[in-house]
Length: 223
Image 1 (cartoon, rainbow, N blue to C red):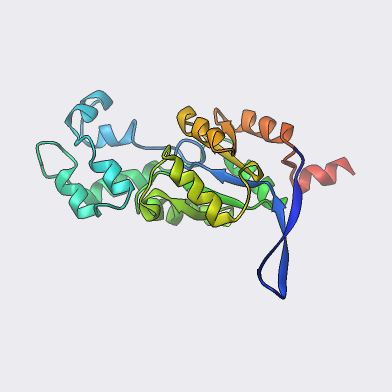
Image 2 (image 1 turned 180 degrees about the horizontal axis):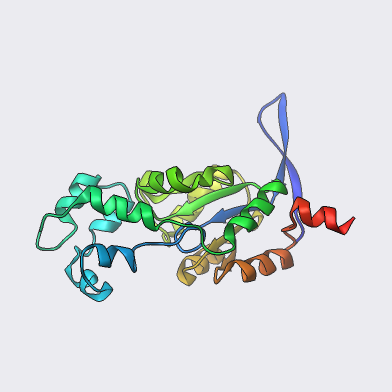
């Protein structure tokens, strides 16, 4: 399906062109490397398997949904309630955030081609640490975060809430996520879904869907 535009208006005298489709991006391990699997276990001096065994089963998800704040997370993170350096953990995570290989160049191309892009992600208020380091807001809006919505993917209601907020029909959105279950739920509610594997394959899949992924430089070379 090729890109198109619609007129949108929030006031009888104000209408603007809106380019479709709208792109919805998961963040962790789709745009930004997730430090949870390597850096965080190392911070605690554990293997990943040991960390999973020791951590509270729901505390992080509660933090992602904004049910608890970071101080409550610190109290609940480990099942046995052990104390740890919360600020040290945040520093570790901040150090581990980096762009997934090749994805920044794709975001630049999409931005240059005027696509509307939003984060649609499960993450706590610490998304601000990512923003401070990588300034993702140059490319997309942090519109749909679980910590502000009080919902997590793959809850279908979270997806429907996104559509209501954007005021578009589901087929006018493309959702990209590295977790297949999240993509499957998007498809179930009518959103076009792409299972993220790497930046090159995403570029190819978006191009096949009619998305212009060329940069200004690419266009100049073609002249």
